[in-house]
Amino acid sequence: MLAHGDVLNDVYTAAAAKCVSILSSEYRGTAMTSKQSKSPDALTFSPRRPSFELAQALAGDWHGGSAFKTAYFNAMSILFPLGEKFFIDSVRVYRNQIDDPKLLDEITAFQGQEAIHRLQHQRYNELLCEQRGYDLDRFERPVRDRMTWAYRELSARRQLAGTVANEHLTAIMANDMLTQKDAFTGADPHVAALWAWHGVEETEHKAVAFDVFVAVGGTVRERRQALIMNTYFFFKDTFRNLCIMLKHDGKLWSLREWLSGFKYLFVSPGVLRRVFFAYLGFYRKDFHPWQHDNRALIAEWEQDYGSTVSRSLT
Ligand SMILES: [Fe+2]
Ligand SMILES: [Fe+2]
Image 1 (tube, rainbow, N blue to C red):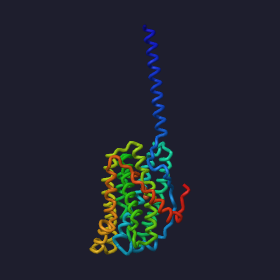
Image 2: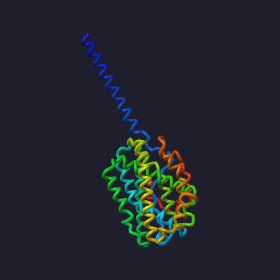
Image 3: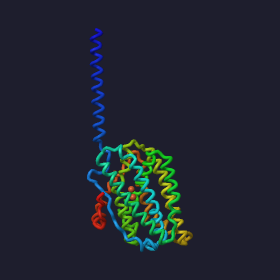
Image 4: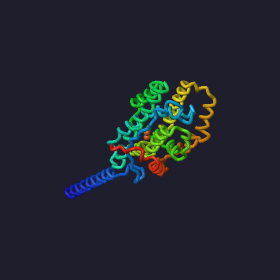
């Protein structure tokens, strides 16, 4: 009886070991082939290398002679070189935890696109400050200090959540700009072309950081908190830069500029008012950037302007 029990025990142990082995190999197999990218299957993208004639326009009020509208976009441009470095770094940290080949390709393209955005906006900002006598360091200092704090104090996943939130802000503004086509009415065509190119690439890679965040266990709560925090800082920094620029140009107390600026942002065309519901969508539990499929905007831009910018081979 004892020997029989021993044999049974051996059989059970062997069977259990086999089950564990099958289950774990199946699990590994699933992980290796799981689809982590939720971008449309047919969507592929890569960095472009555009060139824009900005110098002449940036010396003046390039947005139809409006000091407010010009300063509003210039103020946002100031934030990009530092912000986009942070986005690249926060995604890079998790690259080795991703095994979906499509998402890996998208990470490479995302990093390449953001790196070129950084360069283009760095050049934009330097030309702008040089010609208009602005102090670039004064604009960047508080942003740089906050980035240093974030790199030091926030976990890698919180940093990535910050990127996911900012990518939502850029994606919804890009969608509005490319759909409505009135955000740059009367603006210098060279500067408007830069913003359109940036908007198209933000649309292409809008889900990359999001998909990495989900793949590495990011939670709904983390991304909601990140959007609240990043919305606050995005508008605080933009508004600060805008006020410094208007003050420097002697327009800070111009009621006419502020009324026309308010109208532009919230009434007609209302570039911020129009993105409000898209903004709220991010707080939904089941949100994903590609639930709104706006690939047609990319195709349309490619048809009209795509041939004027060259593709990067990297
Ligand atoms: Fe960008
Ligand atoms: Fe981006």
